[in-house]
Length: 306
Image 1 (cartoon, rainbow, N blue to C red):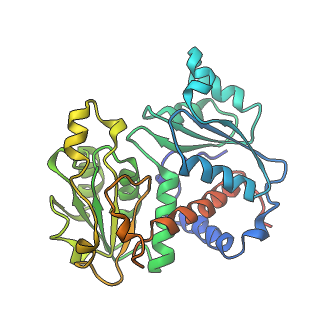
Image 2: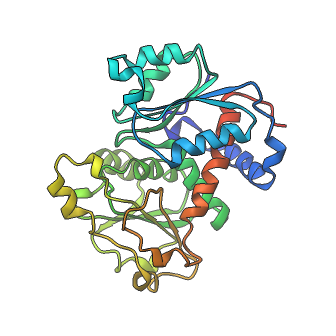
Image 3: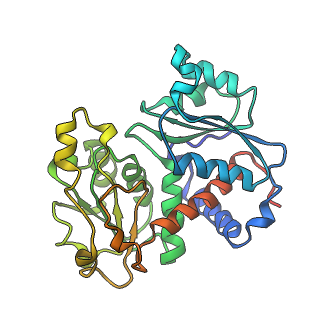
């Protein structure tokens, strides 16, 4: 039985196979509409979510399966003090596969150690968000045609942004990747990402504070919101939340083929005037998220593709 707790749980070859399957699903979704008949997905979301939870549910329903679960800790037995370990033991009796989001880093790993079914980490605190990374990689590969020889700008909350951490770890396995890390000093990438990934793998990267100075050199701009829920006090959040706002003026500095990605939800870090720019790929990205989660469910359940 295989779980997905980190993007690195998949080898590069396994990742490429999964993305190939996601491409086949995107080309003909109806072909896969009965692959998971009789299978159940449990969505255990201890933290609020729109896109991730609903895209998992859409993925399983698109495959002909069914969904059960909860959308907040308050509506589960966690409110009574039940442990993650006990919850997953019970859920293993009800479902065939589980997607878990939890505010505490490592909670999905604890669940996986006690689970009788595959566990997918749908986000754990500020640590990892592997299925968003799969979505990001599918988007980049589909629209750029490759996952190598790219300059990736990561902008905003690089300290608490689990999507950023997962994406850096994944792209570091490809050749010719260069990172431009754009953030205020208070929100720079954690030391473990800088030392254990970027420095350890001798990745080319630089850290800057202004977006305008690096726009012309980027193939991909990955915007992130400053996350209120990760801050210990409101004052720090208010001071940081408007540090970067992508608008038409900044987009005018970028290459004609640069792509703008965002894991969503957006607050105000991308002006709505950018939405109509053909380089804005964040809503396509959300659609790719359904296809890649369909592929992941099929892969972890070891379902023979239809």
